[in-house]
Image 1: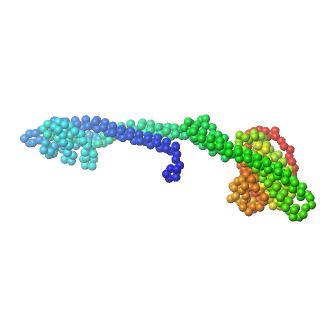
Image 2: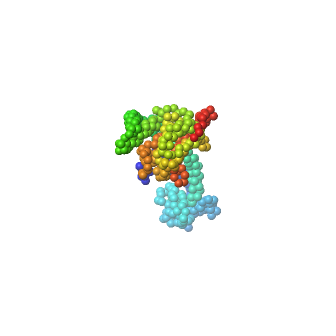
Length: 470
C-alpha cells in the first residue's frame, strides 16, 4: 500500500515517469532555445549598435575649446534614431567625466584602448543594451538602446522553435498514454476474465496471449487453482461418498421403524419410536441434500451438457411427489403452470424445485397455501414458489442462501441446506434468484429467472407438453 492508502498502480508509475521525462525534456529544450534565441538576437543587434559608436568616435575632437563632439545635430539625430527602441549615447573623457550625451547612462566596465565591449544595464526603469568603445586617446563612447526589438525577435524564434516542439511533445505524451494502455491490456483482459468467472470456476487461466513478463504470475496462479481444484474435488468426493454410504442404512432403519410402529406398542415405546423415526427421516433428508449439493457443486468441466428443459414439466412432476406431504400437513399446494423452456440440467433442476417446495412446506403453518408458478415474463423464463408462512426479514434474505444458516427463532426442522442447493443450481444455470414478500403483511416469494436462449426460442414452436389440471 502506497502513501495515503492508495494501492500502487503500474499505469500511474509508467505515465508519471514517461510524461515527467517528456515535460523535463520540453522544459530543457525551451531553456536551450531561449538562450540560443537571446544570443542570436544580441549578435544581430549588437553589430548594428556598434555602427553609431564608431561614427561618434570618429567625430570626437580635441582643440583649444577642449574635447567635444564635432557632428551636426541632424547627423547625430540620425545616428541615434530608431522607430521601435529608444537610443541614447554618452561620451566620457579619459578622466571619466561626461563630455556629451545622456548623463543617466551607466558607466562602462574597464577596458583596454581600442577594445569594444557590450554589456547590459538599466536606464531609468528600463533595461538597455550598451555598446562601448575606448579610443586610443582614452575617450569612452557608449551607445545604448532599449530591448523591445530584441525581445520581439527572441519571442518569434521561441515561438517558431517551440510550437513544433510542443506539438511533438503532446504527440509523444499521447503515444506514451496509448502505449501504456496497450501494454497493460493483457492485465485488463486477465482481470476481466477473473471477474467474469463464477466463484467456483477453478479452470486454469489461458495465458496464450499474455506477455512473457506476466507468464510466471499466470503459471503460479494456475498452480494455486489446481491445488484448490484438487482440494474441492476431494471434498466433494468425501461429501458424496459419506452421504451415499449413509443413505442405505438410514433407509433400512426408517423402514424397520415404520414396520415397528405398525405393531401394538406401549405408549412410552411408541413415543420413543416415533422420535427415532422422525430423526431418521431428517437424517435421510440431510444425506439426500448433501448428495444434491455435491452434485450441484461439481466443477464446470465435470457437468453434463445442457438440454432443452420445460420448467412446467418439472413442476408437474414435483406436484405428484409433494401432494401427499402437503395434504398430511393440511397445506393447500397449488400450481399455476405455463410453458417455460430453458437450456438446463435435467438432473439438477428437479433438485431446485424440490428444495423450494420442501422449504415452503416446512415453514408454512397448517391451513396455509403454497403456489408454484412457471412461465415467461418479457421473454424471461421463470419459476416461483409463494407461501403464506412467517416470511423472511429483509436483513436476512442475503444470508439464508448460506449453508446450514437458519434464522434465529425460526420454527421447523430444516437443516439450512435447501436454499444453499437452490443457489448452487441457479449459479450453474447463470440465473438469478430473488426473495421478496408474498404480500404486504407476511409470506415469502422466491423467484428464479433463467437466461433466455436462442436455441430455446427456435425450438419452442416444436416443443409441446400436455397441460395438466389441478
